[in-house]
Figure 1: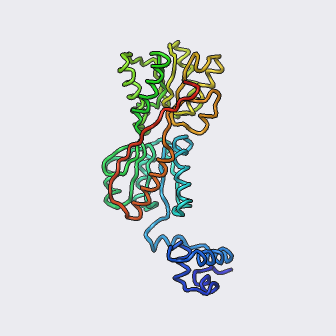
Figure 2 (figure 1 turned 135 degrees about the vertical axis):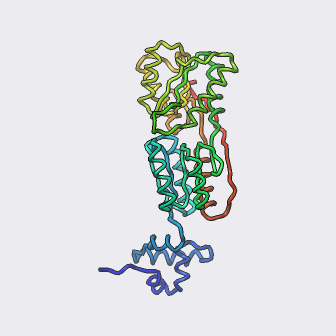
Figure 3 (figure 1 turned 45 degrees about the horizontal axis):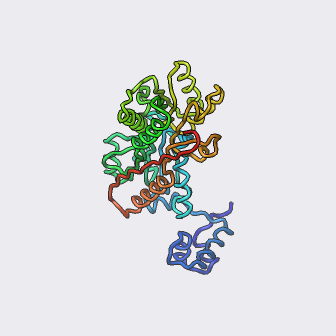
Length: 343
């Protein structure tokens, strides 16, 4: 069997000290660019790969950042992970260590994953996407020194990055009221999930923003103009519009607070029912995913600053992992209403 290539083998081939080779392979700034390129070429030619287990054992690091989300097919989650991935490749840190874990929206799975990451030391930092840990879990993470970052949730003891969902929903609803009248429907994530499934606070905040806009315009809240969804899917969008039509709910517009993908389902069903957008039904989505501007008509939506969120997650995680900060930050970002053709 062919022996494993070591740093010593590369050093002999390169006629350099082992320490110099090690620093070159780890992109140490004290090593010149020419030397770094020389060492890396020899390492490549000799099929050298570092023993990650030994390296991690020596450093006390796992080489991974865990991202835990209800499901990674959601447009919001994947849109945030894209800039995180880009930043990893740009900096050369955690290139192969961005590890996603899905809970399926089940509380017991989330709790088990959080325990696994903490007690099994499976990651150097844990990012919870739209999920909320218990206060005792936060205490344990802090006690053991494992960074815990929350996205779209806010708790003491964690670094948190949130979007002002109340204001985002308020802006969208106010725009629809001013331009199309008082009969504004809303489709939003469920606020009373089945037992054992996670509760998402962003849905509550978006419904609150909708209600504030109604109240400021002296419009009575009508529960018939509200549809709750679980999966934030295209199919649910179609079903929701069908339900509104079956109940003969009077609407001049609908705010799809559960996301752009769902709004696309509403638009598709409207087309099937020969309902003209925006002449007969104005539509606003939430997120501003790339496909939103490519639709015909192009979707008016509430833009979430995905790139800013992703960059902040990555930068915060690296600073905490490397011990460059111990400051607990609670960052709130403002969404923006992007006006296009559907409203």
